[in-house]
Length: 119
Image (cartoon, rainbow, N blue to C red):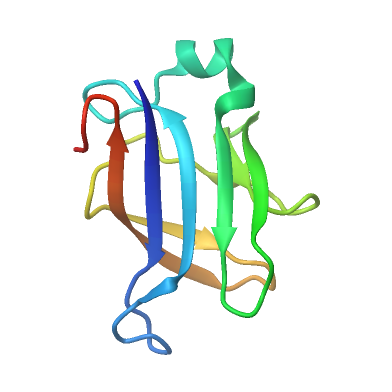
């Protein structure tokens, strides 16, 4: 089932309450257990997208691609892809992403919705 997954910046020293304004929205096929449905993704990789929202910058769009380390996503043309976790993607989980410039930032899964509902 294809899902829309919203990641928001989690708490950091600079953002003690996190930041709704710093977020990613992914579209991925997930199995019932929250792991990537690799068969569906392999059949329709063009449907797996990412959009990056950042204050004072234009939105960036990209795709989920397969890398030697597994599935990853990049929201900028020349950016290295962020790995998509192999464990289930569930509301409340935290993903560590390396931002342009090298800062590693925590992003919390705030929503995971689709035709069959959220997790």
